Image (cartoon, rainbow, N blue to C red; front, side, top):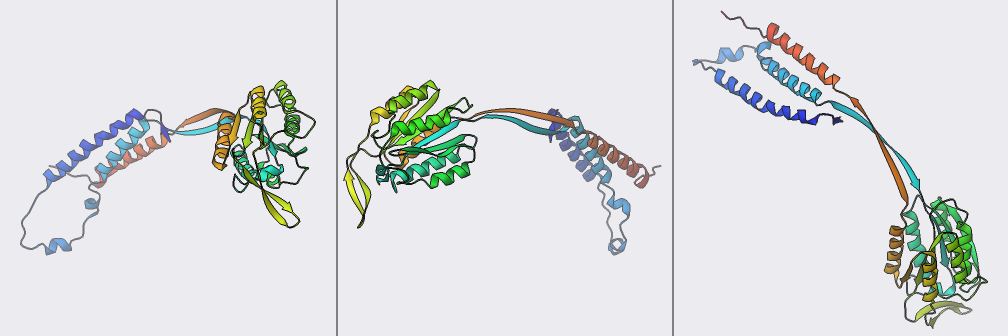
Length: 328
């Protein structure tokens, strides 16, 4: 409920002096009589006139309130929105090579990447998102989809050993480009996450970046891993053993890919910095939302006028018939 002329509501302040004047008149009209015995008076039943004595004033006050509300023009408002959402297509390319099992991120690089990427996906319900994984080779784990529940189920199943080991960054990027290039969406983005340098595949990372640029696809690259030696679990016939390895990380290539395509390179050395990377990408790649609001106002003052008229008629009836006094 809204009011077209809310300024009229200030007229309700007039009720303060009106009520004050009425109370003053009642006090001034009080009379006292001295009696030796009030028992007979107490035993007498009060007449209906006594109970109705103040009703006319209450009704007149109600008339003032209702007329004031009617002057303010109460309106019922129906609002509805027409939303035009332009989503973004995002292809995620994730390295699942053996070095992604390093435990400098907790519980390891791969699981940390899956967790943070999953939170990123859930925060973008209007976008089509797909998943490509790569190691020595590359394949599409999930094509572009708005069914993020299915995407998350497929993402959860990603693990080391699904494909031959190695790090084919160029092949992984090229696969992601191939999956997103036919999309009619204006904004296309690839998020490439890896912890190594390109050592497998027939496509060079620079070549894949040039192809992405020619198709208007922006690539954000994320380098995962600390700058120090890391422990990596290795499965052996006698069980899991840990080996210590120096970081083999090609930041130069990742920076070139991002620069070529108009994206940004990020480095994540722990879980917190990885979360910060995805938060920054989320802020930079906003879904466009156009909202048109419509409102329909319907005047609703007539019920107040009718109620005021009924109160006025009832007051006139009581004052001139029921509570009428005869004076000489």
